Length: 357
Picture 1: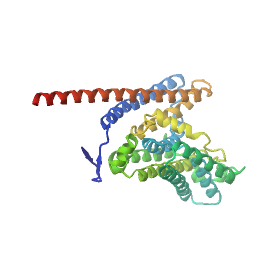
Picture 2: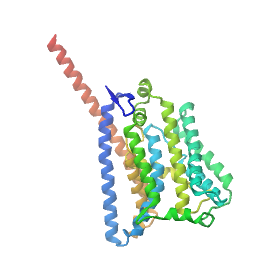
Picture 3: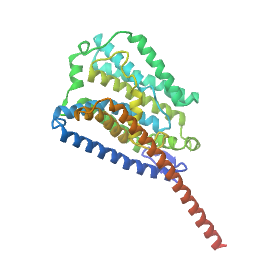
Picture 4: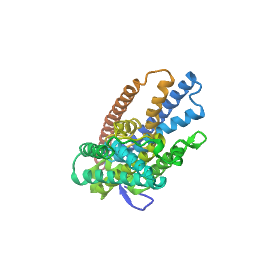
């Protein structure tokens, strides 16, 4: 059976595609559950603190989530292909400083953003080439590039620091401004999110990322350009990490050599909690965005309820473990269901052959 995409590229369904559809349905339900949990959490917090959902409160919630949503969107593309990018935090840090250093020298804000994105593209392209051609596990490759990029960043930045006073006023205003309670940065993140989701759903190359993650060998046999797709996923991930670096600079106006440290773990948590299966082939960028919104909101909700922020990391860890446990349980149940379905089909075929004989 073939599926014709809008680009008229026939994509052969890989074995287990029915199982993949079942998993997709389960994780869409999980995305809905995350949304419900988020809304309940916000409602409870508002009941305990009537100022929580003020115009500024809503703007702060969205601003806090914007950076993580951007990086999680790019990370989703990589995880869907059954890979991971642990260097996104380092990429964010070095691109944020590059944009800030350029602006400090009198550069144009629009060109600063382009510079950050291009630098991110370079980092992502490096990861993609090493993973696809080097045949080395992505975890190992991107852990290495994490330290390489962080080391270059530390040598370049040294003890220097970019502050809001070093940046153009218009750039700072853009980072904190918006349409009423909706920040400009959140609108950019939303546009990127919708465009990425549309690409994954309606373009043949986007659907091929899922096929690659579901069964790499079957995807290769079906004629899917595996290396090219992996490089594309990593390049887009790097570009979005670079854009997030520029947005981070606009949002906080403060960048040094420690910017982005440990951010990759938060990104992976957001993606997995949002229902993107870590073993690839299933999930959506909308789920990753919901995961990012949930994790960043916890940082705001706990202080508003008078709970120590020390619990934030513990709660994030618990959510990550629960998400991985759910992934594993779903995978096992789908495997059992498919075995039963296959056995019933073989039995029915055998009976049919016996009857005709």
